[in-house]
Image 1 (cartoon, rainbow, N blue to C red):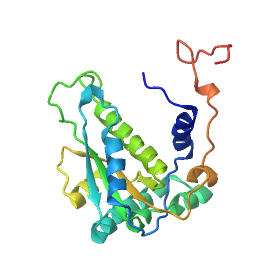
Image 2 (image 1 turned 120 degrees about the horizontal axis):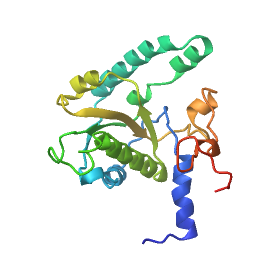
Image 3 (image 1 turned 60 degrees about the vertical axis):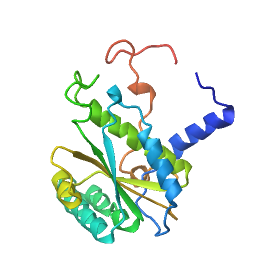
Length: 220
């Protein structure tokens, strides 16, 4: 079992608690060795059945980034009809310009055929390939934070639009569009919390014991 010093543990938790979803970037290029370290951290994520279903498409072309931003903007406007008044204004105010501003956009994909027809874990729960890819993205996020690099995860676009733009095969899932780069506006709190979109829930009410909804009077 690996042991961590107190300072090493503090560094791990610091990355977890200070990681933010950033939407504003400078054009300063990211050193190649830093990008490799961030991708290598993603590639060392836990993977159910060791299937490693991810690929990483590195996008530096301004034209391609412009088209990806168009896909996100189109979907954002479509989603805005579900919100009214102030919430709609705040929703529309969320930037997708980061896709164009950041020096690098990464499309993280998930291949549901990796490892063949019978992959340990995926036989029972098919979604484990996507869960594994999410773990890779989280590793990327924490590594970026430790490197002083901001990261933004764009979560609204039509997947077929991204497939068309990046020539992704039909069976491959474009799981995430990630913008990374340096920023002059790194928030102290999550953007949606600062915008009063939602507040972080307390942990204690989310914990049940032995069965759903069953609370334990003892304090953890």
